[in-house]
Image (cartoon, rainbow, N blue to C red; front, side):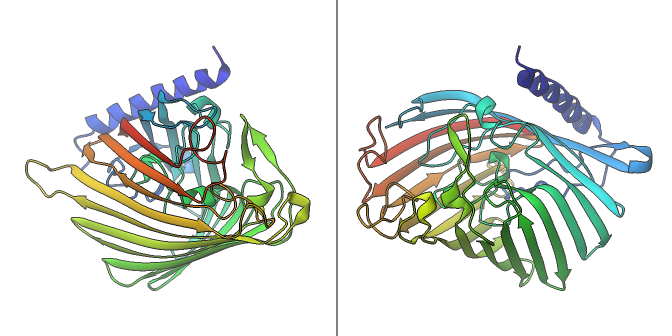
Length: 398
């Protein structure tokens, strides 16, 4: 048996023990739900995760997610499969939340399926950012100020890295333009209704601290908030890295600027979160970008959670997206979607059910490419202009 599968099996066993402990703890009346990882809303974290008194470390919380999914699709691209069964998450999360020095470690197997791209097995996918994709130390001198250092989630975008964190199983077309995991340092400061974040990182998982990103969120009231985000390379970088045939660090994207503005309305039973995004890759002939190229996109994420009654625990998330890119296949512009100058739109619906730590959801999605370069779209020869997918995911968030 491969070492990676031994590790995942151990994590799986620990997760089941943690889930059992959470279910058995009927005496815990108060919620100790953790701030991290971030959950979008239709799947919720265990309100009372397992905690261990660890001497000088203080209280250590142990939580995680164990889930699997199935997928079927039309017009699979070369190297992808029409149908697949796999783990989506077998992750264990260990963290502390009190004191001057804290830590967060998230490890195990994971998949990051996204619309319009080829899928990987969870074993291969878990090599992209390693079997511990997120791990950082936290210096927390006050409730309003903290510094993180290590492997950090990105500050950019309206969706998160792992399926359990999002409204939909698959991430969207706009997410495909963003960085995912960063190595670096991040500062966080809250003043009144404004939360500020700034980070110096390796950007698109590069080799140097060469990427600056920042975010600001304004909480208007308990129901409404708005945010702006930006990421900019501080100097040109030609570094590239490929794992399992996938470009984890692409020099094109590692030289990409990202800008996002969004708004969130969240008042039960309705959640609405639209955002707009732009990316820009400057001319850099050394990496094959002969002309500056940009993308412009917008997305609407929304979910309705049915109130108490026969449909209690059921929610209905949907996502609408459109993205386009500048240039053409003949003017030196680089391909950022389905060839230079291409675009795409998508629709995704993900009926979801959660009861205590158990969740189940199904998903249907449709992607249509526009002005795609032959060989860059869907199907074995890359000439099909659309793709349909159906997915199902079942798991526990313990």
